[in-house]
Image 1 (cartoon, rainbow, N blue to C red):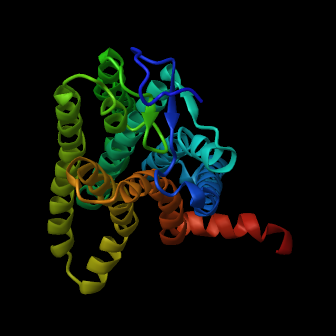
Image 2: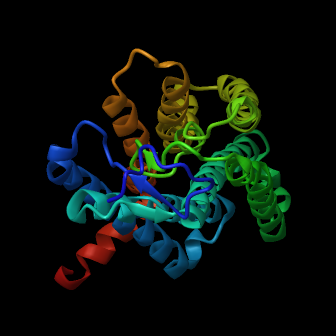
Length: 315
């Protein structure tokens, strides 16, 4: 490899991903949990899609939104993990400039889609609990499709500045990215220019998109809790609240790692770099792994279909 640390160049044709800097000797061992989590994410999310498609009784808004969540989980994890594993296993560190920006776009757009889908699922829970008699008339198939389209368009539009901003900076010092994938802040930090606009846009996007989504989810659950507390018996209250547990767990699985990773990347100056990179890499796999497990365990219809699927031959 040439002296890429000090070569004078502008906008390199390729970047070099280091994987987990400082833990190169442990890459093979690190790959084991990554590969296992990725396999679980693939199996779990494809199982959700297969079961919902196969069972007509599951063709309702909550499960349509769950399928959208499964698709975003699959795309987000697949856009990064195979490249990570190639670094860990084969030391295949090169990635073209265009592929790097494409990966960046996919990671951030599908992460934003996940957030938007969780808002849509919160709205579904709100309508189901606060307006149960009107649920089927409010959340028709066409309304669900329009919500899904709005989530996709919002995510695609808000994410576009990431690769465009990254492309405009001159990269005249190094093409080595001390990360396992093309994270926006890790790429633009290599630029020999004032990149404050990229950093500020990243924070703006974090708080305007995810922040607004958290606000709308909180508003939905405020109304949901008010409706639950008006129910006459403790039994009815617990049963109704139980229908929200899966969604609440999915929210925590996405937002806690997301905010923690984003804020530590920007403000964790005293945190070891390998820890920051490891957290940012694991974060991409936490929601795809946990979402199908949460809904598979907590949702009776899916749990029953899963058991039928795996034990069909024995019954």
